Length: 314
Image 1: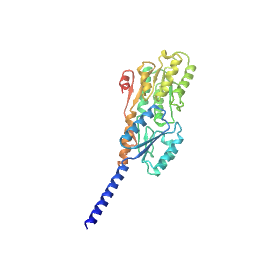
Image 2: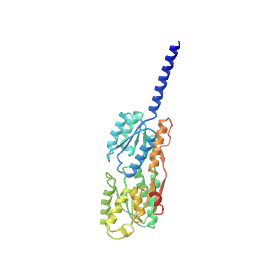
Image 3: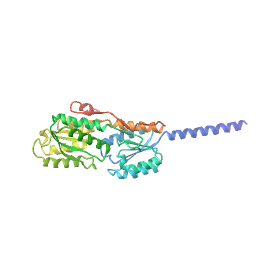
Image 4: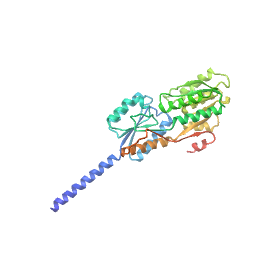
């Protein structure tokens, strides 16, 4: 009888240990992060922040960059499903990768948006309020021009978070009858957007050679603003008072604002906060928490010469 009791105790200990190993294994999920936009500084910061937060939680985080190929995101999502990851995070327009998202849904693998767009196939999307950022920067331009002048816009309607910015800027500029939009440009973003924006701004400058013919450049993110700045400098027109604004407050933009030149303002998004927030939401969801909000907004702040030092210091 004593021997039987010992055998039962050993068996119970083994089962308990195996159960503990199972719990530990479940507590360390694998998460795939998929984006075609890793060449963009903002995306890099968000993905790095998510990866750091996930690895701090003991996860395996696999970052997959399709290098500008949006269609390839679908097959990469399908690959992640085949690999049976625990969750997927995307940084791309969900409407353009719906087939991949449906595959994940059918496999009961949750997908989260990291500055993507809202979609029923996503658990939630963590982003900045694009409407508010565009309103603040376009209003800044109008105020600087005293409501009158010619504006060049750089937009990117293929990506929902940026498309929203262009729509709001369009509306605010249109509400000021003395503001004229000279051009609404969509740059090639394959290499990040600076080079093509520079080339396209050079064409606008050539078409409008008279001093004062261009009053401002409004860019939906910083890369086109930086390209426009380079073109203006190369054309020797930096002393015409052309006002440039962007959105993201990436390091190059902050340096340009600090130089007190044409690049006057940007919006600081909390990219680290976005990445960390998505990681927390993934953790909560995998832990059984129900997430009801389709969008989670992370706060932003206008950056000008008056407060840029605060952001460079970070």
